[in-house]
Length: 188
Ligand code: NI
Image 1 (cartoon, rainbow, N blue to C red):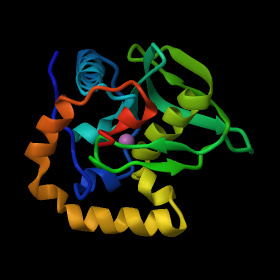
Image 2: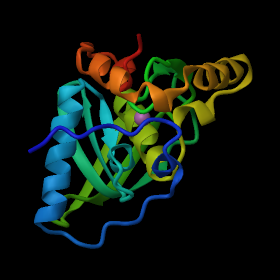
Image 3: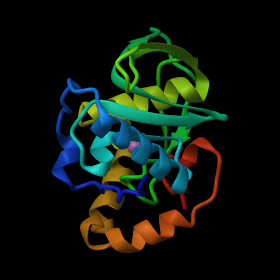
Image 4: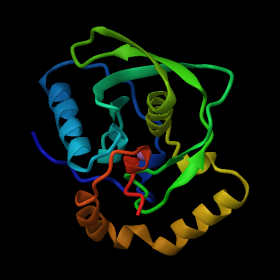
């Protein structure tokens, strides 16, 4: 297994619609295993493959002690929304804002062996699934902000000049400890 470095906003892979996984073998198993280890290392709640530079439809998650991965996920969201909660993202270090998400979702897909997976989710898990699936479509949580929060976030992203501080934020992120949803990204 290996700890992978995380791509930061500005990297085109984060804005690319990821390809469906078609090959199930040792390479995919290694990807899932490395992503899981990386997610645990940074105490993240979830990680999508584009975040480690792989444009394939894979994400891992770790919410409230429940850990797993879904490949080629399809979400069936409820029409209604859950109360806004603060999200961060490992690919946008230091930023955290409340995000509007659907109340529940059912994620269906397959696991690394190609076996069908179906997970009913509410609360933080539903939020995580929506955040990670967005990554597979090239969408970041800041895209979902509105009004003042959106302006503030875009200003902060411009000011942060992320591409030049990747090394530093990676080191900082590795030291971040937290179990809240905010640890999706280092919300500090
Ligand atoms: Ni993220």
